[in-house]
Amino acid sequence: MGKKSFGRGLADNEAMAIAKNIRTSPQKLNLVAETIRGKNCEAALAELQFSRRRISGEVKKLLESAIANAENNHQLDVDRLFVAEASVGKGMVLKRWRARARGRVGRIQKPFSNMRLIIREREETV
Image (cartoon, rainbow, N blue to C red; front, side, top):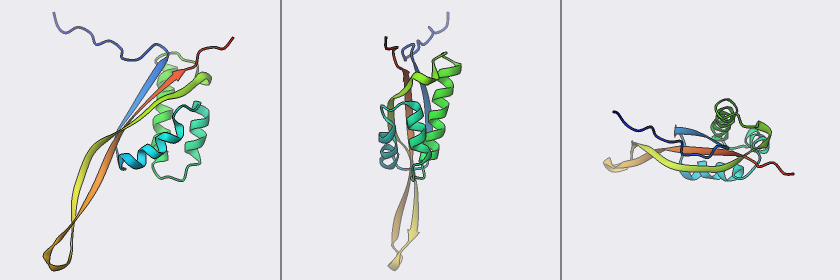
């Protein structure tokens, strides 16, 4: 008996990597994700390598993980990979406080984000 197996949600020429609880706001992470959407994987890695944003190192690790998944798990050609989707979602928010004047409180919110990266292999051009 038991459950039926859950089918693969991606096409045969796609690979995915997910990063959860990235310590930055989704708005800031989406700015970095916009710079690599639709780009070739080599160009996206170069873009992230020289980006001045703090979170670009985490996104670079995620992209390298997706490339490794494509190569090892799905036997895709690394030279023909490009970033098909880079979606950013909201994670948890740590709520802290700081004492202010006259017994009041200033709220500090420390947001976390989730990111999903799908890379796809380009079709061969004849």
